[in-house]
Image 1: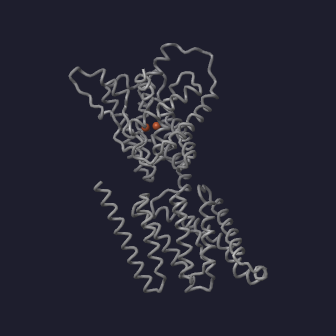
Image 2: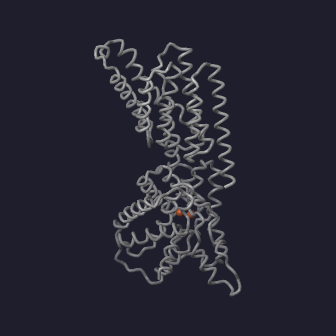
Image 3: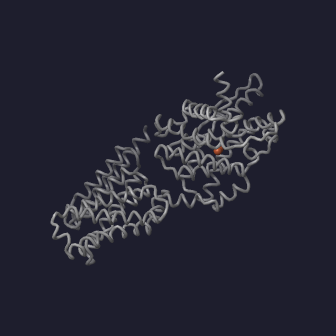
Amino acid sequence: MLSKTKIDYRISLIIFIVALLLTVFCQVVDFPLIIPLLMLILGGHLFFQRQADYKMYLHLSLLLILIVFTAHAIREYTDFSLLYVPVASVAMLTILLFNDLQLAFFMSFSSSILVSLVWGGDLKVMLVFFIGSLTASYTVCDARTRGRLIAAGFYVSIMQVVCMALMNPDIHYLITKEFALDILRPLFINGFISAFVVVATLKIFELLFGVLTNFSLMELSDFNQPLLKRMILEAPGTYHHSIVVSNLAEAAADAIGANSMLCRVGAYYHDIGKMEKAEYFTENQLVGSNKHDNIEPSISRLVILNHVKEGIELAKKNKLNPLIVDFIPQHHGTSLMHYFYQKALEEAEEDASIGEENYRYPGPKPQKRETAIVLLADSVEAATRSIDEANPQKIEEVVRKIINNKFIDGQLDECNITLKEIELIALTFTRILGAMYHSRIKYPEKKSTHDDRSEKSTEESSDNPSQDHQDRKESSK
Ligand SMILES: [Fe+2]
Ligand SMILES: [Fe+2]
C-alpha cells in the first residue's frame, strides 16, 4: 500500500512538471496552452486507469511533443503544406508499441488537435487527421509484417481523401485542379509518409521505451535464435513441450483478446532453464529411467526449482527482453511441487517437519493475462499427456480440474483476468487438445505392466504439474 502511494505521488509529480515546462515553453514560442492541458489529461487518464506508470506517460508525451515539433518545423522552415505532417504515425506507433486501442484513440485525438492548433486551428483539418489516425489504429493493430504497415498507410490516405471531400459540400470546388493538387494530393501522400516514418523509427522507439513489438517478437520466435537452437539439440522433449504450450497459449490469448504473439514467444522461452539439467525432466527422459528415483526429495526439489533460476540467468545472459524473462518465474507462480512434497512427507521421520512453503516455487504469481495463460497452458499440457486413452470428455475434465485448482490455489490472484476469460481459455484448451489427441493412432501392441508403471512414475516426477492432476484425483476421492 505504501509503495503504491509512493508510485502515485511520483507519477503526479512528473505529470505536473511536464505540464509546467510545457506551459512555459508554449508561452515562449507562442503555442496554444491547450498543449499542456492535453498532457495533463493524458496523465490523468493513465493515473486513474492505473494501466501505466510514469514511464509510459513520458513515452506518450514524447510522441506528442515530437509530432508538435515536426508540425512547427514544417511550418517555420519549409514551404510544404500542413497536410503533409504525418499525424497518423503517432497512432500507429502507439498501437504497435503499447497494443492498446483506447490509448491509440486518445493519442489520435490529441495529436490531431495539437497539429491543427500549431497551424492555426482548422477544424476540418483536425477532423481529417483524427479520422486518418483512427483508421491507422485499426488497420495496423496486430500487424506482424512491414507490408501491413504500408497497407495501413494506404487506407489512411484513402480515408483522409474521402473525409476531406465529404467535408466540402461545394461540388464545383471538388472537381477543380486546385483542390486536387493542393488538398487531395498531400493528404494522399500523407498516409504513405506516416507508414514510412513508422517503419523507419519503430525499432528506435522500441529500444528507447524498452517494449516489445510484434516485429521483435517475430524475430525472437525464429528457431535459429541461439537459445531455441540449443534447446532443440539439448532438450528435445522440452522443445516439443514448449511448442505445444505455445500453440495452446496463442489460441487462448486470441480467444480473450490478449497479446497472442507475446504468449507464443513467452511459451517458447519459459523452460529454457531445463537445458542445464535436461535429463531430470520428464519430457527428456527415456521410458523407465527416472533420475529422481535415486535421490532425496529435497535434492529433487532443488534441481526442479533451479530450472527457474537458471532460466532467468540464461535469459539475462542472452539479453532477452524483460517481458519475455517474466514468463520464466511466473509460469509456475508459487505452485506447490506436489509429487516431491508428498514423497518428502512419506520419507520423513515421524518428528521431522516438512514445510509446504519449501516445496513451492518462489513466484511471483502471473502479473499479466499473458503469463497467466502460459501458466495454465503449461499445467494443462503436462496433465493431459498422462491421460490414458484420451477422449474429449476426459480432456475437458482434466483441463477444468487443472484450471480450477490453479484458481483456488490463488495463482491467478495478481493478474487482471476475469472468470469469463478463464472459461474461454478452458474451452480453447479443450478444443485444441481434443483435436491433437483425436488424430493419434493407437498401436496394437500391448505395453507390459512394468513399462506402464515406469512411465507413470517418470511422468509424476517431473517439475510439470501433472502431479496436480494426480493430486486432485486423490483429493476428489
Ligand atoms: Fe517450468
Ligand atoms: Fe513448462
